[in-house]
Length: 226
Image (cartoon, rainbow, N blue to C red; front, top):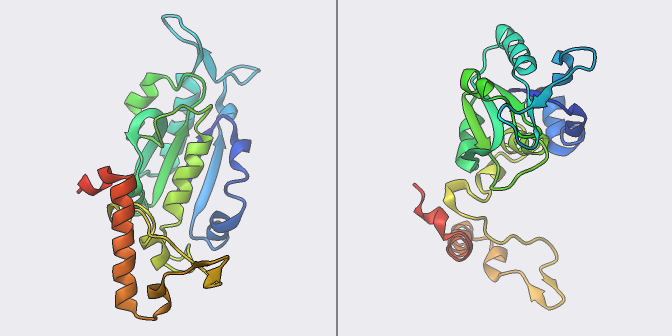
């Protein structure tokens, strides 16, 4: 799977993709990440990519021309399954969306800064607008890292145990059950006996019951989802 990412501050994306699972996925050829510096398409000697808003008001807007030139050039070279703008006013991103996007072959991410991007880019090029939560960040780089990580770990071969992703929180609209490791007893606290029993069916039933109980207590809204 390929992610092309348009960023005004590409340096912010160096660390998330240079370590751990994402780096191993890239090294194995399971995932490709290309970061495009929007400044390369900036206007004038200072490579300008932002300007004041029409109508007045505080804050700057990412200009239409640099973004359009960049996106048009990329679209001439590649076919995208989705062109995603990460924005606080987008559809709330969730595990179901991650599952869906993990089936795609190539995705273009547009990362905003300042007050956002010129609306004409959204109207002309963007096929999907996503938000990682009801809050505002300084730019789209951190949301992009979240999106790529959550999708990348679902790709076949990325995790050493493919079943691991299927038991994560929010799969099947349930939070994950409690997990334990050795030792079986620590400072008077013990691992539930059923997990030590070796009885797979009982363990599976216990985990489901624990996941359901946690979801009812913490996120009952998830149980109402289809």
